[in-house]
Amino acid sequence: NDVSRVLKYRARNAAVAIMARTGDPLCRIMHRPAGEHTVYAELRARGPVHQPKQGPPLLLSHRLCSEVLRDTRIGMRLPGGRSASPNNTLSGTFIEYDPPDHTRLRRLAAPAFRPRLLRDYRTRIEKVTLDLLHSAVRKGEFDLVTDFASPLPIAVISDLLGIPDEHADRFARNGRLMAESPMGTSRLGHQRAINAAIADLGRLFADLMEQRRADPRDDVISLLTAAESEDRITADELVKTCGLLLIAGFETTVNLIGNATKLLTDDHPAQWALLKQDPDLAPRAVEEVLRYAPPVPFASRICQETVDLDGRSLPPKTMLMLLFAAANRDPEAYAEPDQFLLERAAGEPEHLSFSSGIHYCLGAPLARMEGEVALRAMIELMPNLRVIGEPTPRPTNVLRGYLHLPVAV
Ligand code: HEM
Picture 1: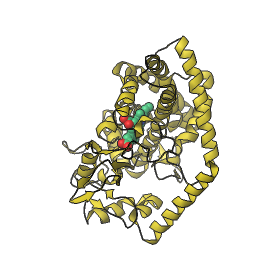
Picture 2: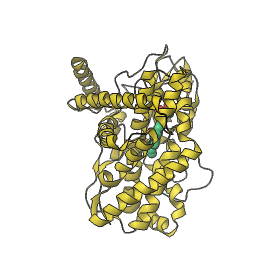
Picture 3: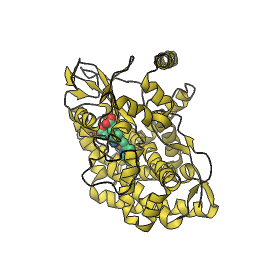
């Protein structure tokens, strides 16, 4: 297993080296995300789809990305149902399935986000937010990511799944490791620790399922074990679904809160002032942060049959890269797309940061709520919040955000 990982790691590095030599734009984007919008603008000037010398076509337009995400001839898996990336931590979870399995599993997990539960989560989010921010205020200077943005979503997901307090640290530790890299960073040595985390979480979920079978509660693990008893989900799918909620809902939300803080307090103080004047703009601020700096900057899809796209015929198995970060700044969709504005013109389409179509983010209402509560609390408890040191960007290209963001209240 390790040998195969080493080979894959080398192959990936070789591919990146080839891309670099040929001046491949995707390579430039992945290695220099800070300058990615200049690259997108150059490519967009040549058309909505860019075919690099190596690798899959890149889709830059909001309209085309939306069309592809809703096209039933384009899916997640290879034609025939094989996983396109069997070794990443999301493989075997419903995010990488096509119908009918995707539909079945998504339906089973969806009740975890019904309005009554969301109202309960809000109470919990507010409490955790206030606890974390009060201790941050006492410190005066703190790391916005490790002291606030990171512990908040992990506490919320623990609650949602029903992880008992005595396992909260074990859950958070493993979750952090797993979520660090859904597609794998290039740090091979890290892979062993990630595998150990996956195995330990599997054991934790399996133990909890055993308990919930005997003593069901109002949590997702109980909801899924009930479905298991009716043969609607297998034990393996059940463990994987819990893992998906953890991975999909954790670092993404950390990045939303980290990006929001940097964009508002440091990069666009006039917008921060606007938000302080009118805290009810918080939900719009969350949307604009998501549009401007999407935590998940791109996704991929695979043609299941021949598809015509923007005048070219794509054979089955063609992979497509959907650049959400580019689509979110498409001038055909947004007026002044490179401006960060809480008060955007009415009638602009929703950003693609939660994707679209059948894989539209299941946790979007929860993520929005966490972002809104966090912003409202920061305005109230630390209106003079400011960045005081160099932020550390995440060392991965699949997620955009910060590992550390030093701030003072
Ligand atoms: C799917 C983004 C928070 C659970 C997705 C996808 C994106 C996304 C882009 C679709 C990927 C694709 O189409 O290939 C985000 C962002 C978040 C966030 C930016 C925070 C700001 C959450 C939370 C949860 C969650 C809090 C749950 C606790 C899921 C699940 C899916 C998903 C289960 C799979 C949906 C499906 O395949 O049908 N998310 N997410 N996400 N997300 Fe989120």
